[in-house]
Image 1: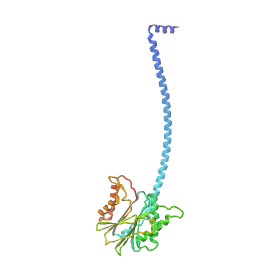
Image 2 (image 1 turned 90 degrees about the vertical axis):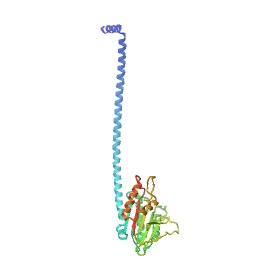
Image 3 (image 1 turned 135 degrees about the vertical axis):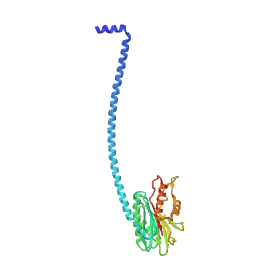
Image 4 (image 1 turned 30 degrees about the horizontal axis):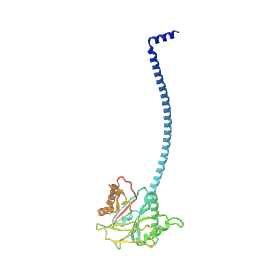
Length: 323
């Protein structure tokens, strides 16, 4: 009864007080509802974020585990390739042979990958000095396998019989390559190699050269002459074709260069084009009178400058010899 009297008294003297109080109460209630709803939403988002973080952490841990396994496998593969490179180097002939039979020499041998499809060979054949540069199909592991097969077949071609000129060797090698890659009832494996074979006759002062998609440079009196090989694929030559033999005389002091196409095929320069054989010939002409070890250094520096930030595109082999 007393509360009612107070309430009616307030309304009689201040009619707006009730409305204002009611309005404040409604505003307060709405704010409370909003804050309560926002609190619930924030809690839900927090729980969701924690779940996402837990899932991300789990995925990250799984990714790290897979990455660790991948790194382990890559390390094992790399270690295997490094050891394969060691084996491949052992199969190549000792450079001491060149030291004993030439005034000066260099071998610029740079695989694109760890192992190489290019290889070289030298030794005495029928009283002459035989030098071989070869480029097996591909590079990396496939190229290295082709190069090992090529070395084996080359040894057979040289040792089976008394070959006394490069044409005889390359003709035998052509037959061996054809036989090795051709299996009865199977498709022919179209793998082979470009090869250049040079024989130096110190008795008669002559050099002989035969090649399959490979040439040799002979520099005499500061003039470069290209001894061109035949445009025939080893093991797939035309029926009835016989490889030709180029012969040059020398007196001593001349330079000869055998090589594969890796140096000339390197992309680079301002227009990112191939180095090309014309630049390669010009470079050799300008440096041929220098000591061979210095020539090798210039070839390396020129290649690196030309290549720039490009990747090496192929295996590289250049052999320089002073008669």
